[in-house]
Image (cartoon, rainbow, N blue to C red; front, top):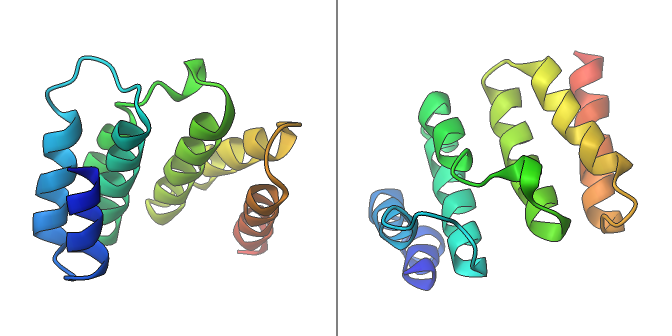
Length: 125
């Protein structure tokens, strides 16, 4: 379902069908734990953000317990949440998420750089 959602989103440019596939992948699960689950939640949240539905996007990314996660899924989910918060005008909260990613000594350099650039952009406004 995660692959189907990705195909519908990127190749077919059908966000509605992609969102449906992503949701089917995670909505029935009590706990998000597999890579496909994380990807589905993150991609669904991004689609909702693009559609301007920030509350639903935040609720969706909230299915991932970011505060309890470690490693790449914590970092990438936090980045998605920060992006949604930024778009929603909740800059203080977004900055906090970006700074947590930047402070993580295990974060990939590329992700740290994206977080640093986002912080600079937010602070410049």
